[in-house]
Length: 275
Image (cartoon, rainbow, N blue to C red; front, side):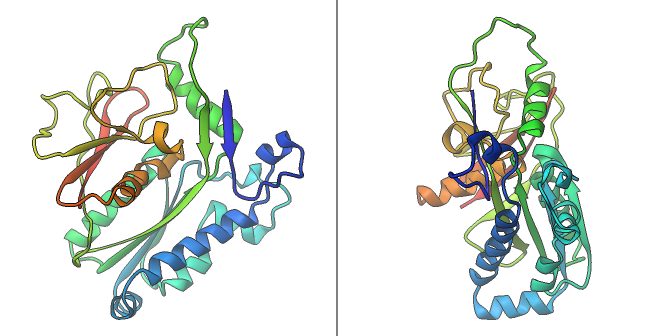
């Protein structure tokens, strides 16, 4: 079974219509609120430094141009969802590079890898990554069918309910000291998407392993590790960021968490978070 939790849904509307055609304005407003929260989480001095420094802005989502699935949407809001939220660009006083990354579940990882290079090459002082996951049923079903196509067994039973939850996020990266330190590793091509292969990447210094896999429940999850989707629900490209939610939720400190993002067919990408 499936369950969707979407911005803009109202209980007084017929349940199927809630899931299929919710209002899009609350989703856009959520992006605005989360960017405000990220900006004001910084000290006044750091906030002023960000607004006056070399800052790049990266917008991410899972589906690319998904505005066609929205109901009664204006051209302005369509541009905000499909192309670039100009109100956020203005909010962060971005005058340099802006771009959008549409990479399905890898959008956040790709944006962080780009930010890591920008900062390492001293091209920018700050990189702002904003984005969200819109739980469009048709697109979610299509993405899941790609995962399940690996095992074609019509008689298999998938226990539980697949939960698809819309989430938004805004993350500010720089070389300055912070409570979290993040490093993106390379994409690892393997014969399978098993993140525990000892001959692929050394995990001796890793205290926890978080798995941001697909919704598919036909494959057993290893006992050692955190299944982010089982714990928090699936949020597409925003699912890997839930590993930071786990760190905050359990007030972890003095350790390292590796977040693994599996490929559709084989291989995986990962990033490490020191807390």
